[in-house]
Image (cartoon, rainbow, N blue to C red; front, side):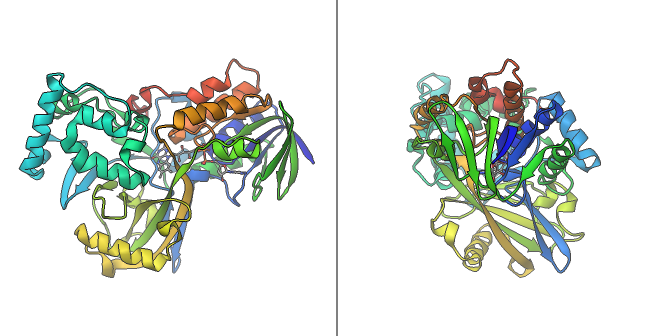
Amino acid sequence: MQNSDVIIIGGGVSGLMAGIELAQNGKKVIILEKEDVVGGQCKTEVLDVKGEKYRFDYGGHRFITHNKELLAFVEEVLGDDLLVAQRSSVILHQNKVYEYPLNLKNLIKVAPFRMLFGAFLDSIKVVLGLSKPDDTNFKTWITSRFGKTLYNNFFGPYTEKLWGVKPETLSSDWAGQRISLIDLKDVISKLLFKSKKTARTYARDFRYPKHGFGGLPLKMAAKFEALGGIIVRNAEVQSFVFNDHKIQEIQTPQGSFSGDHIISTMPLNEMSKKLGFESNLGFRSLRFLCLALDIKDFSPHTWQYVSDFELLPTRIQEPKRRSEHMAPKGKSSIMLELPCNVGDNVWNMDEKELLEIVKKDLKKLNFEIEDKIIDYFSFKTEHAYNMMDVDYNINRDRTIEYLARFENLTMAGRQGTFRYIFLDTAMETGLMAASKVLGKNITQKEIFNHRNEKTVIETNSVA
Ligand SMILES: Cc1cc2nc3c(=O)[nH]c(=O)nc-3n(C[C@H](O)[C@H](O)[C@H](O)COP(=O)(O)OP(=O)(O)OC[C@H]3O[C@@H](n4cnc5c(N)ncnc54)[C@H](O)[C@@H]3O)c2cc1C
Protein backbone atom coordinates (compact mmCIF):
# COMPACT_ATOMS: atom_id res chain seq x y z
CA MET A 1 0.00 0.00 0.00
CA GLN A 2 1.27 3.47 -0.92
CA ASN A 3 0.93 6.17 1.73
CA SER A 4 0.79 9.91 1.18
CA ASP A 5 -0.14 13.04 3.11
CA VAL A 6 -3.07 13.59 0.76
CA ILE A 7 -4.78 11.38 -1.83
CA ILE A 8 -6.91 13.20 -4.41
CA ILE A 9 -9.51 11.24 -6.36
CA GLY A 10 -9.93 12.68 -9.86
CA GLY A 11 -7.56 14.53 -12.18
CA GLY A 12 -10.04 17.12 -13.48
CA VAL A 13 -9.38 20.84 -12.98
CA SER A 14 -10.68 20.72 -9.42
CA GLY A 15 -8.44 17.84 -8.29
CA LEU A 16 -5.44 19.34 -10.10
CA MET A 17 -6.02 22.75 -8.51
CA ALA A 18 -6.12 21.14 -5.04
CA GLY A 19 -2.98 19.14 -5.89
CA ILE A 20 -0.98 22.19 -6.99
CA GLU A 21 -1.93 24.20 -3.89
CA LEU A 22 -1.03 21.33 -1.54
CA ALA A 23 2.24 20.49 -3.30
CA GLN A 24 3.19 24.20 -3.19
CA ASN A 25 2.66 24.01 0.58
CA GLY A 26 5.03 21.08 1.01
CA LYS A 27 2.52 18.20 1.12
CA LYS A 28 3.12 14.80 -0.45
CA VAL A 29 0.20 14.33 -2.83
CA ILE A 30 -1.01 11.50 -5.10
CA ILE A 31 -3.80 12.05 -7.65
CA LEU A 32 -5.73 8.94 -8.70
CA GLU A 33 -7.32 9.34 -12.15
CA LYS A 34 -9.50 6.64 -13.68
CA GLU A 35 -8.75 7.59 -17.32
CA ASP A 36 -5.38 7.39 -19.06
CA VAL A 37 -5.41 11.18 -19.42
CA VAL A 38 -6.22 14.03 -17.01
CA GLY A 39 -8.88 16.68 -17.59
CA GLY A 40 -12.25 15.04 -16.88
CA GLN A 41 -14.96 17.19 -18.47
CA CYS A 42 -12.37 19.69 -19.55
CA LYS A 43 -10.62 17.57 -22.17
CA THR A 44 -10.16 18.14 -25.92
CA GLU A 45 -10.43 15.24 -28.38
CA VAL A 46 -8.63 15.27 -31.73
CA LEU A 47 -9.87 13.90 -35.07
CA ASP A 48 -6.89 13.36 -37.37
CA VAL A 49 -7.83 13.34 -41.06
CA LYS A 50 -4.75 12.59 -43.19
CA GLY A 51 -2.53 14.55 -40.82
CA GLU A 52 -4.97 17.47 -40.49
CA LYS A 53 -6.27 18.01 -36.96
CA TYR A 54 -9.81 18.90 -35.92
CA ARG A 55 -10.20 19.55 -32.18
CA PHE A 56 -13.35 19.25 -30.06
CA ASP A 57 -13.98 20.00 -26.37
CA TYR A 58 -16.45 18.04 -24.26
CA GLY A 59 -19.09 20.63 -25.20
CA GLY A 60 -17.67 24.01 -26.17
CA HIS A 61 -16.17 25.63 -23.11
CA ARG A 62 -15.46 29.25 -22.26
CA PHE A 63 -13.65 30.65 -19.25
CA ILE A 64 -15.31 33.49 -17.36
CA THR A 65 -14.48 34.52 -13.82
CA HIS A 66 -14.75 37.45 -11.44
CA ASN A 67 -11.80 36.07 -9.46
CA LYS A 68 -8.66 38.03 -10.40
CA GLU A 69 -6.26 35.58 -8.70
CA LEU A 70 -7.79 32.66 -10.56
CA LEU A 71 -7.53 34.47 -13.87
CA ALA A 72 -3.86 35.31 -13.10
CA PHE A 73 -3.25 31.61 -12.35
CA VAL A 74 -4.84 30.48 -15.65
CA GLU A 75 -2.87 33.18 -17.53
CA GLU A 76 0.36 32.00 -15.91
CA VAL A 77 -0.32 28.32 -16.66
CA LEU A 78 -1.35 28.87 -20.29
CA GLY A 79 0.89 31.82 -21.16
CA ASP A 80 0.60 32.80 -24.83
CA ASP A 81 -1.82 29.93 -25.43
CA LEU A 82 -4.67 31.89 -23.79
CA LEU A 83 -6.80 33.82 -26.25
CA VAL A 84 -9.75 36.19 -25.86
CA ALA A 85 -12.78 35.16 -27.91
CA GLN A 86 -16.22 36.65 -28.49
CA ARG A 87 -19.43 34.78 -28.17
CA SER A 88 -22.23 34.94 -30.68
CA SER A 89 -25.31 32.81 -30.03
CA VAL A 90 -28.63 32.24 -31.74
CA ILE A 91 -31.72 30.17 -31.00
CA LEU A 92 -33.10 28.09 -33.87
CA HIS A 93 -36.83 27.66 -33.50
CA GLN A 94 -39.30 26.40 -36.09
CA ASN A 95 -37.12 27.46 -39.01
CA LYS A 96 -36.49 30.92 -37.59
CA VAL A 97 -33.27 32.34 -36.18
CA TYR A 98 -33.53 34.37 -32.96
CA GLU A 99 -30.54 36.36 -31.78
CA TYR A 100 -29.41 35.71 -28.21
CA PRO A 101 -29.41 37.81 -26.08
CA LEU A 102 -32.83 38.72 -27.48
CA ASN A 103 -33.10 42.04 -29.26
CA LEU A 104 -36.27 43.89 -30.09
CA LYS A 105 -35.59 44.53 -33.78
CA ASN A 106 -34.83 40.88 -34.45
CA LEU A 107 -37.83 39.69 -32.40
CA ILE A 108 -40.29 41.91 -34.25
CA LYS A 109 -38.82 40.86 -37.59
CA VAL A 110 -38.69 37.12 -36.90
CA ALA A 111 -41.30 36.06 -34.32
CA PRO A 112 -44.76 35.07 -35.57
CA PHE A 113 -47.44 37.60 -34.63
CA ARG A 114 -49.38 34.99 -32.58
CA MET A 115 -46.38 34.36 -30.38
CA LEU A 116 -45.61 38.04 -29.86
CA PHE A 117 -49.25 38.77 -29.04
CA GLY A 118 -49.42 35.82 -26.60
CA ALA A 119 -46.23 36.98 -24.86
CA PHE A 120 -47.62 40.54 -24.72
CA LEU A 121 -50.83 39.32 -22.96
CA ASP A 122 -48.70 37.23 -20.55
CA SER A 123 -46.54 40.27 -19.76
CA ILE A 124 -49.64 42.30 -18.79
CA LYS A 125 -50.49 39.63 -16.20
CA VAL A 126 -46.94 39.81 -14.81
CA VAL A 127 -46.89 43.64 -14.78
CA LEU A 128 -50.30 43.78 -12.99
CA GLY A 129 -49.08 41.22 -10.45
CA LEU A 130 -51.77 38.69 -11.46
CA SER A 131 -49.11 36.02 -11.86
CA LYS A 132 -47.10 35.48 -8.64
CA PRO A 133 -43.70 33.69 -8.75
CA ASP A 134 -44.25 29.96 -8.09
CA ASP A 135 -41.10 27.92 -7.38
CA THR A 136 -42.80 24.49 -7.03
CA ASN A 137 -40.99 23.07 -10.06
CA PHE A 138 -39.31 24.16 -13.31
CA LYS A 139 -42.60 24.51 -15.20
CA THR A 140 -44.32 26.65 -12.56
CA TRP A 141 -41.14 28.77 -12.18
CA ILE A 142 -41.20 29.62 -15.88
CA THR A 143 -44.94 29.95 -16.47
CA SER A 144 -45.42 32.21 -13.42
CA ARG A 145 -42.61 34.55 -14.52
CA PHE A 146 -42.54 34.30 -18.33
CA GLY A 147 -46.07 33.09 -19.16
CA LYS A 148 -47.41 30.09 -21.04
CA THR A 149 -46.57 31.36 -24.54
CA LEU A 150 -42.79 31.37 -24.08
CA TYR A 151 -42.97 28.17 -22.00
CA ASN A 152 -44.90 26.26 -24.69
CA ASN A 153 -42.68 27.56 -27.48
CA PHE A 154 -39.15 27.58 -26.02
CA PHE A 155 -38.55 26.61 -22.42
CA GLY A 156 -40.83 23.56 -22.22
CA PRO A 157 -39.75 21.58 -25.34
CA TYR A 158 -36.04 22.47 -24.99
CA THR A 159 -35.95 21.49 -21.32
CA GLU A 160 -37.75 18.19 -21.92
CA LYS A 161 -35.32 17.35 -24.72
CA LEU A 162 -32.26 18.30 -22.65
CA TRP A 163 -33.28 16.38 -19.52
CA GLY A 164 -35.38 13.58 -21.01
CA VAL A 165 -38.13 14.11 -18.40
CA LYS A 166 -41.22 16.30 -18.05
CA PRO A 167 -40.23 19.81 -16.85
CA GLU A 168 -42.74 19.58 -13.97
CA THR A 169 -40.57 16.80 -12.45
CA LEU A 170 -37.52 19.10 -12.42
CA SER A 171 -36.51 21.40 -9.59
CA SER A 172 -36.98 25.14 -10.11
CA ASP A 173 -33.26 25.44 -9.16
CA TRP A 174 -32.40 24.60 -12.78
CA ALA A 175 -34.29 27.67 -13.94
CA GLY A 176 -33.08 29.88 -11.09
CA GLN A 177 -29.44 29.04 -11.79
CA ARG A 178 -29.59 29.17 -15.59
CA ILE A 179 -31.91 32.05 -16.39
CA SER A 180 -30.53 35.43 -15.44
CA LEU A 181 -33.70 37.31 -16.41
CA ILE A 182 -36.13 37.94 -13.58
CA ASP A 183 -39.45 37.82 -15.44
CA LEU A 184 -41.24 39.18 -18.53
CA LYS A 185 -41.02 42.73 -17.12
CA ASP A 186 -37.26 42.30 -17.02
CA VAL A 187 -37.22 40.91 -20.58
CA ILE A 188 -39.10 43.98 -21.80
CA SER A 189 -36.87 46.43 -19.93
CA LYS A 190 -33.74 44.68 -21.28
CA LEU A 191 -35.17 44.81 -24.79
CA LEU A 192 -35.99 48.51 -24.50
CA PHE A 193 -33.08 49.77 -22.40
CA LYS A 194 -29.54 48.43 -22.40
CA SER A 195 -28.74 47.28 -18.86
CA LYS A 196 -25.25 47.99 -17.48
CA LYS A 197 -25.23 44.72 -15.53
CA THR A 198 -23.76 41.86 -17.54
CA ALA A 199 -25.12 38.49 -16.56
CA ARG A 200 -22.81 35.53 -17.05
CA THR A 201 -25.20 34.01 -19.55
CA TYR A 202 -24.93 37.28 -21.51
CA ALA A 203 -21.16 37.79 -21.25
CA ARG A 204 -19.67 38.30 -24.71
CA ASP A 205 -15.93 38.09 -24.13
CA PHE A 206 -14.32 35.00 -22.72
CA ARG A 207 -10.92 33.34 -22.42
CA TYR A 208 -10.09 30.28 -24.45
CA PRO A 209 -6.90 28.19 -24.85
CA LYS A 210 -5.55 28.18 -28.41
CA HIS A 211 -5.90 24.42 -28.94
CA GLY A 212 -9.00 23.75 -26.87
CA PHE A 213 -9.76 23.64 -23.17
CA GLY A 214 -7.95 20.33 -22.68
CA GLY A 215 -4.73 22.38 -22.77
CA LEU A 216 -5.48 23.77 -19.29
CA PRO A 217 -5.55 20.48 -17.29
CA LEU A 218 -2.55 19.13 -19.25
CA LYS A 219 -0.48 22.15 -18.27
CA MET A 220 -1.80 22.05 -14.71
CA ALA A 221 -0.76 18.39 -14.51
CA ALA A 222 2.75 19.27 -15.71
CA LYS A 223 2.96 22.00 -13.05
CA PHE A 224 1.76 19.60 -10.35
CA GLU A 225 4.30 16.95 -11.35
CA ALA A 226 7.09 19.55 -11.47
CA LEU A 227 6.24 20.34 -7.84
CA GLY A 228 6.80 16.67 -6.93
CA GLY A 229 3.16 15.55 -7.13
CA ILE A 230 2.35 12.06 -8.44
CA ILE A 231 -0.49 11.28 -10.86
CA VAL A 232 -1.51 7.64 -11.16
CA ARG A 233 -3.48 7.21 -14.39
CA ASN A 234 -5.84 4.29 -15.15
CA ALA A 235 -6.44 4.17 -11.40
CA GLU A 236 -10.21 3.98 -11.03
CA VAL A 237 -11.16 3.96 -7.37
CA GLN A 238 -13.20 0.79 -7.07
CA SER A 239 -13.69 0.37 -3.35
CA PHE A 240 -12.71 1.60 0.10
CA VAL A 241 -11.81 0.01 3.40
CA PHE A 242 -13.44 2.19 6.05
CA ASN A 243 -14.81 2.26 9.58
CA ASP A 244 -17.57 4.56 10.85
CA HIS A 245 -15.40 7.66 10.98
CA LYS A 246 -12.42 7.16 8.66
CA ILE A 247 -11.45 5.94 5.19
CA GLN A 248 -8.48 3.65 5.77
CA GLU A 249 -7.67 2.34 2.31
CA ILE A 250 -8.46 3.21 -1.31
CA GLN A 251 -8.42 0.31 -3.77
CA THR A 252 -7.66 0.71 -7.48
CA PRO A 253 -6.36 -1.55 -10.29
CA GLN A 254 -2.97 0.16 -9.75
CA GLY A 255 -2.81 -0.93 -6.11
CA SER A 256 -3.99 0.36 -2.75
CA PHE A 257 -3.43 3.82 -1.31
CA SER A 258 -3.88 5.54 2.02
CA GLY A 259 -3.63 9.15 3.10
CA ASP A 260 -4.03 11.35 6.18
CA HIS A 261 -6.49 13.31 4.06
CA ILE A 262 -8.60 12.37 1.05
CA ILE A 263 -10.03 14.93 -1.36
CA SER A 264 -12.60 13.38 -3.69
CA THR A 265 -13.91 14.94 -6.90
CA MET A 266 -15.58 11.76 -8.16
CA PRO A 267 -19.40 11.89 -8.45
CA LEU A 268 -21.11 12.29 -5.07
CA ASN A 269 -23.52 9.39 -5.68
CA GLU A 270 -20.73 6.96 -6.65
CA MET A 271 -18.59 8.04 -3.69
CA SER A 272 -21.41 7.55 -1.18
CA LYS A 273 -22.40 4.18 -2.68
CA LYS A 274 -18.85 2.86 -2.23
CA LEU A 275 -19.04 4.06 1.38
CA GLY A 276 -22.32 2.28 2.10
CA PHE A 277 -25.05 4.84 1.29
CA GLU A 278 -27.52 4.85 -1.63
CA SER A 279 -28.08 8.52 -2.52
CA ASN A 280 -30.80 8.25 -5.21
CA LEU A 281 -28.92 10.93 -7.12
CA GLY A 282 -28.19 10.59 -10.84
CA PHE A 283 -26.75 12.31 -13.92
CA ARG A 284 -27.89 13.19 -17.44
CA SER A 285 -25.34 12.25 -20.10
CA LEU A 286 -24.26 13.74 -23.42
CA ARG A 287 -23.01 12.26 -26.65
CA PHE A 288 -21.01 14.57 -28.91
CA LEU A 289 -21.15 13.97 -32.65
CA CYS A 290 -18.29 15.78 -34.38
CA LEU A 291 -18.09 16.48 -38.11
CA ALA A 292 -14.98 17.59 -40.02
CA LEU A 293 -16.13 19.84 -42.88
CA ASP A 294 -14.62 20.86 -46.17
CA ILE A 295 -15.87 24.45 -45.87
CA LYS A 296 -14.15 27.58 -44.61
CA ASP A 297 -16.96 28.65 -42.26
CA PHE A 298 -20.14 26.95 -41.13
CA SER A 299 -21.72 30.06 -39.60
CA PRO A 300 -20.71 33.22 -37.71
CA HIS A 301 -22.03 31.77 -34.42
CA THR A 302 -20.28 30.12 -31.50
CA TRP A 303 -23.45 28.40 -30.38
CA GLN A 304 -26.75 27.62 -32.03
CA TYR A 305 -29.43 26.33 -29.66
CA VAL A 306 -31.86 23.92 -31.31
CA SER A 307 -35.14 24.29 -29.44
CA ASP A 308 -37.36 22.07 -31.64
CA PHE A 309 -38.26 18.97 -29.64
CA GLU A 310 -38.34 16.59 -32.61
CA LEU A 311 -34.72 17.31 -33.59
CA LEU A 312 -32.02 15.35 -31.75
CA PRO A 313 -29.34 17.98 -30.98
CA THR A 314 -29.76 20.62 -28.30
CA ARG A 315 -26.77 22.69 -29.43
CA ILE A 316 -24.54 23.02 -32.46
CA GLN A 317 -21.17 24.62 -31.99
CA GLU A 318 -18.38 25.46 -34.37
CA PRO A 319 -15.03 25.10 -32.52
CA LYS A 320 -13.30 27.50 -34.92
CA ARG A 321 -15.40 30.36 -33.56
CA ARG A 322 -13.53 29.97 -30.24
CA SER A 323 -10.06 29.60 -31.72
CA GLU A 324 -9.02 29.40 -35.37
CA HIS A 325 -6.56 26.67 -34.33
CA MET A 326 -9.43 24.23 -33.67
CA ALA A 327 -9.66 23.32 -37.38
CA PRO A 328 -7.11 23.14 -40.25
CA LYS A 329 -6.62 26.30 -42.34
CA GLY A 330 -9.46 26.83 -44.81
CA LYS A 331 -11.65 24.14 -43.21
CA SER A 332 -14.12 24.01 -40.36
CA SER A 333 -16.03 21.56 -38.16
CA ILE A 334 -19.15 21.33 -36.04
CA MET A 335 -20.08 19.50 -32.88
CA LEU A 336 -23.64 18.48 -32.08
CA GLU A 337 -24.60 17.89 -28.46
CA LEU A 338 -27.01 14.98 -28.10
CA PRO A 339 -28.54 14.51 -24.65
CA CYS A 340 -29.02 10.89 -23.53
CA ASN A 341 -28.87 8.45 -20.64
CA VAL A 342 -26.27 5.70 -20.26
CA GLY A 343 -27.52 2.62 -22.11
CA ASP A 344 -30.34 4.31 -24.03
CA ASN A 345 -30.81 4.42 -27.79
CA VAL A 346 -28.69 7.52 -28.45
CA TRP A 347 -25.93 6.37 -26.06
CA ASN A 348 -25.66 2.95 -27.77
CA MET A 349 -26.41 3.89 -31.38
CA ASP A 350 -23.93 3.02 -34.09
CA GLU A 351 -22.07 6.19 -35.19
CA LYS A 352 -23.13 5.81 -38.83
CA GLU A 353 -26.80 5.50 -37.87
CA LEU A 354 -26.47 8.55 -35.62
CA LEU A 355 -24.89 10.52 -38.46
CA GLU A 356 -27.80 9.70 -40.78
CA ILE A 357 -30.33 11.04 -38.23
CA VAL A 358 -28.28 14.17 -37.62
CA LYS A 359 -27.85 14.79 -41.36
CA LYS A 360 -31.64 14.83 -41.72
CA ASP A 361 -31.94 17.19 -38.74
CA LEU A 362 -29.35 19.54 -40.23
CA LYS A 363 -31.28 19.58 -43.49
CA LYS A 364 -34.48 20.48 -41.62
CA LEU A 365 -32.52 23.36 -40.10
CA ASN A 366 -31.55 24.47 -43.63
CA PHE A 367 -27.87 23.51 -43.33
CA GLU A 368 -26.92 21.97 -46.66
CA ILE A 369 -23.58 20.40 -45.73
CA GLU A 370 -24.07 16.70 -46.48
CA ASP A 371 -21.50 16.64 -49.31
CA LYS A 372 -19.02 18.68 -47.22
CA ILE A 373 -18.58 16.07 -44.47
CA ILE A 374 -15.00 14.77 -44.67
CA ASP A 375 -15.03 12.58 -41.58
CA TYR A 376 -16.83 12.17 -38.27
CA PHE A 377 -16.59 10.56 -34.85
CA SER A 378 -18.33 10.74 -31.50
CA PHE A 379 -17.51 10.60 -27.81
CA LYS A 380 -19.56 10.69 -24.62
CA THR A 381 -19.63 11.98 -21.08
CA GLU A 382 -21.68 10.14 -18.50
CA HIS A 383 -21.84 12.89 -15.86
CA ALA A 384 -22.73 15.93 -17.99
CA TYR A 385 -25.45 17.39 -15.75
CA ASN A 386 -26.41 16.53 -12.18
CA MET A 387 -30.06 15.47 -12.38
CA MET A 388 -32.01 18.25 -10.67
CA ASP A 389 -35.32 16.49 -10.10
CA VAL A 390 -37.73 17.92 -7.54
CA ASP A 391 -36.27 15.68 -4.78
CA TYR A 392 -32.60 16.24 -5.52
CA ASN A 393 -31.97 18.75 -2.74
CA ILE A 394 -33.32 16.42 -0.06
CA ASN A 395 -31.32 13.48 -1.42
CA ARG A 396 -28.18 15.62 -1.75
CA ASP A 397 -28.51 16.89 1.85
CA ARG A 398 -28.93 13.33 3.17
CA THR A 399 -25.85 12.19 1.27
CA ILE A 400 -23.77 15.12 2.52
CA GLU A 401 -24.90 14.37 6.07
CA TYR A 402 -23.92 10.69 5.72
CA LEU A 403 -20.46 11.49 4.34
CA ALA A 404 -19.78 13.99 7.15
CA ARG A 405 -18.88 11.05 9.45
CA PHE A 406 -15.64 10.44 7.52
CA GLU A 407 -13.33 12.93 9.19
CA ASN A 408 -10.46 12.50 6.70
CA LEU A 409 -12.70 13.11 3.63
CA THR A 410 -13.31 16.39 1.77
CA MET A 411 -15.57 16.50 -1.29
CA ALA A 412 -14.95 19.07 -4.06
CA GLY A 413 -15.53 19.74 -7.80
CA ARG A 414 -18.63 19.72 -9.98
CA GLN A 415 -19.57 16.06 -9.63
CA GLY A 416 -18.19 15.78 -6.10
CA THR A 417 -20.46 18.54 -4.81
CA PHE A 418 -23.32 17.56 -7.14
CA ARG A 419 -23.71 21.12 -8.40
CA TYR A 420 -24.13 22.70 -11.81
CA ILE A 421 -20.95 24.76 -11.60
CA PHE A 422 -18.51 26.04 -14.21
CA LEU A 423 -14.84 25.29 -14.38
CA ASP A 424 -13.76 28.45 -12.56
CA THR A 425 -15.97 27.51 -9.59
CA ALA A 426 -14.83 23.86 -9.78
CA MET A 427 -11.22 25.12 -9.54
CA GLU A 428 -12.14 27.33 -6.59
CA THR A 429 -13.67 24.36 -4.75
CA GLY A 430 -10.40 22.46 -5.30
CA LEU A 431 -8.50 25.37 -3.83
CA MET A 432 -10.90 25.50 -0.87
CA ALA A 433 -10.49 21.76 -0.26
CA ALA A 434 -6.71 22.22 -0.20
CA SER A 435 -7.08 25.14 2.23
CA LYS A 436 -9.25 22.98 4.51
CA VAL A 437 -6.60 20.25 4.52
CA LEU A 438 -3.92 22.89 5.26
CA GLY A 439 -5.88 23.87 8.38
CA LYS A 440 -7.17 27.19 7.06
CA ASN A 441 -10.59 28.36 8.12
CA ILE A 442 -12.70 26.57 5.47
CA THR A 443 -15.50 24.11 6.17
CA GLN A 444 -16.94 21.34 3.98
CA LYS A 445 -20.30 23.15 4.14
CA GLU A 446 -18.72 26.23 2.55
CA ILE A 447 -17.31 24.09 -0.27
CA PHE A 448 -20.70 22.48 -0.96
CA ASN A 449 -22.38 25.91 -1.03
CA HIS A 450 -19.67 27.87 -2.83
CA ARG A 451 -21.26 30.36 -5.27
CA ASN A 452 -24.68 28.87 -4.66
CA GLU A 453 -26.18 32.32 -4.66
CA LYS A 454 -27.53 34.14 -7.71
CA THR A 455 -24.11 35.63 -8.46
CA VAL A 456 -23.30 32.34 -10.26
CA ILE A 457 -24.93 33.83 -13.33
CA GLU A 458 -24.98 37.50 -12.53
CA THR A 459 -21.29 37.97 -11.98
CA ASN A 460 -19.35 40.57 -13.92
CA SER A 461 -16.48 38.84 -15.61
CA VAL A 462 -12.91 40.08 -15.38
CA ALA A 463 -12.06 37.73 -18.25
C1 LIG B 1 -21.34 20.11 -22.04
C2 LIG B 1 -20.57 20.90 -21.02
C3 LIG B 1 -20.22 22.22 -21.31
C4 LIG B 1 -19.52 22.97 -20.36
N1 LIG B 1 -19.18 24.26 -20.67
C5 LIG B 1 -18.50 25.01 -19.78
C6 LIG B 1 -18.12 26.34 -20.10
O1 LIG B 1 -18.39 26.84 -21.18
N2 LIG B 1 -17.44 27.04 -19.17
C7 LIG B 1 -17.10 26.53 -17.96
O2 LIG B 1 -16.47 27.23 -17.17
N3 LIG B 1 -17.45 25.27 -17.62
C8 LIG B 1 -18.15 24.49 -18.49
N4 LIG B 1 -18.49 23.20 -18.17
C9 LIG B 1 -18.20 22.71 -16.81
C10 LIG B 1 -16.75 22.30 -16.58
O3 LIG B 1 -16.37 21.36 -17.58
C11 LIG B 1 -16.66 21.62 -15.22
O4 LIG B 1 -17.14 22.50 -14.23
C12 LIG B 1 -15.24 21.23 -14.80
O5 LIG B 1 -14.54 20.63 -15.85
C13 LIG B 1 -15.39 20.26 -13.63
O6 LIG B 1 -14.13 19.87 -13.17
P1 LIG B 1 -14.03 18.83 -11.97
O7 LIG B 1 -12.61 18.59 -11.74
O8 LIG B 1 -14.86 19.30 -10.85
O9 LIG B 1 -14.78 17.51 -12.51
P2 LIG B 1 -14.38 16.50 -13.68
O10 LIG B 1 -13.84 17.23 -14.82
O11 LIG B 1 -15.55 15.62 -13.87
O12 LIG B 1 -13.20 15.66 -13.04
C14 LIG B 1 -13.40 14.56 -12.22
C15 LIG B 1 -12.33 13.54 -12.53
O13 LIG B 1 -12.53 12.41 -11.68
C16 LIG B 1 -12.27 11.24 -12.42
N5 LIG B 1 -12.97 10.12 -11.75
C17 LIG B 1 -14.30 9.90 -11.67
N6 LIG B 1 -14.55 8.79 -11.00
C18 LIG B 1 -13.35 8.30 -10.60
C19 LIG B 1 -12.94 7.16 -9.87
N7 LIG B 1 -13.83 6.27 -9.40
N8 LIG B 1 -11.61 6.98 -9.65
C20 LIG B 1 -10.68 7.85 -10.13
N9 LIG B 1 -11.02 8.94 -10.84
C21 LIG B 1 -12.34 9.16 -11.07
C22 LIG B 1 -12.82 11.56 -13.81
O14 LIG B 1 -12.28 10.72 -14.80
C23 LIG B 1 -12.41 13.01 -13.96
O15 LIG B 1 -11.16 13.14 -14.59
C24 LIG B 1 -19.18 22.40 -19.09
C25 LIG B 1 -19.51 21.08 -18.82
C26 LIG B 1 -20.20 20.33 -19.76
C27 LIG B 1 -20.57 18.91 -19.44
